[in-house]
Length: 232
Ligand SMILES: Nc1nc2c(ncn2[C@@H]2O[C@H](COP(=O)(O)OP(=O)(O)OP(=O)(O)O)[C@@H](O)[C@H]2O)c(=O)[nH]1
Ligand SMILES: [Mg+2]
Image (cartoon, rainbow, N blue to C red; front, side, top):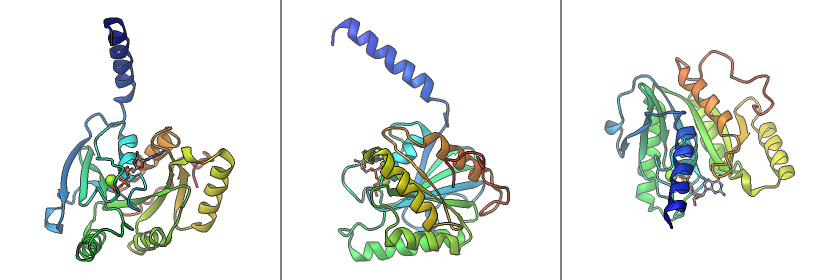
């Protein structure tokens, strides 16, 4: 790259950085937990992100925080093997849960994760809501439903991110969203999302902020954007 091109490149990056620094400028990785006694202190509020392995959870966390590599992303499924805690602001966290549905994970480890998740949902008072990330081309698989019912059974709100929406044409995307909303009516809210194209990121962040403000699981104030048709 010659000097002129390098300068332009620098300017573009600086510009990009300036405009993408604002969501959660102090977001940081706190720790990964393999056992409940490694969870960070159960104070403030947090929102967990679950979903099939490779569905795009870590990418969604990066898009929501406008950080390229806060959460590790990978083409190899099963990369997130711990409950990873991220601080967005003091006492406000996002939590990346291990992806489910990855057959190559040895059974004892799968059993361990199951126990870990049960402990997390049972005991975690700061957990106000769960976001389930799913590939918009294959939404609401059996395990997504299990996760949804599991979280609802423990009094948590659920918000579905139908991600990789960039892989669908407009009309398929609209149909998929309408069907997901119909199928989960009264149990979850849903929206289209794309980490790569930026679709629905602002809306999802708005919902996230709403959940993080909630005092107790599920919150008691009404959801944001009731006048906004993007929200279910
Ligand atoms: N086209 C497209 N690809 C995406 C999108 N989000 C994620 N991906 C790709 O999907 C793959 C998996 O993304 P991750 O974010 O690592 O998925 P994950 O759910 O965290 O995966 P595990 O941690 O392994 O369970 C990567 O190759 C991403 O680049 C999206 O919105 N659009
Ligand atoms: Mg991940």
